[in-house]
Structures are given as structure tokens and as C-alpha cells.
Image (cartoon, rainbow, N blue to C red; front, side):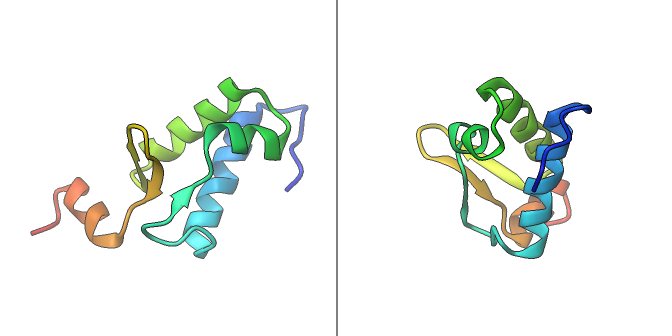
Length: 86
């Protein structure tokens, strides 16, 4: 993916991460690349990558575990977070 540097970069990166999650490239339960890895991949500073990941997390598709990383939520985990689980 090419970043359009004439527009804000973090939304573009967040959109790409979400696309990868929804396409199954990052399947449920898998670890998402770290902020440093994302920054390196897209050629941005860590704070831009961090903001993108905060947006992804706000969409309710990932969870972060201190010292472990960020993981794609399984469908049942998403439902539980949305209040629909059982």
C-alpha cells in the first residue's frame, strides 16, 4: 500500500490494518504487528503508527495485552464487548 503523503497518514494506515483484519490476512486470534513494525512498514514515525492503532482498537476489532502485543478479536470476543454475548 502506498501512503498519500498529501493527506493525514494515520487514517490511511488504520484503514489498511482494518482491511487486513477483515480480509483474514490477520485472522482472529493472531497478533497484529507492533507499532514499531507498522511505522517501519509504512515509513512513518511511531506516534503516527500509534494513532492508527488506537483508531483500529476503537473500532472494537483488537485487544491489547500489556507486554504481549495487540491481537485480533475472535467474533465471540467482539460480541461480548458489544454486549451481545452470552
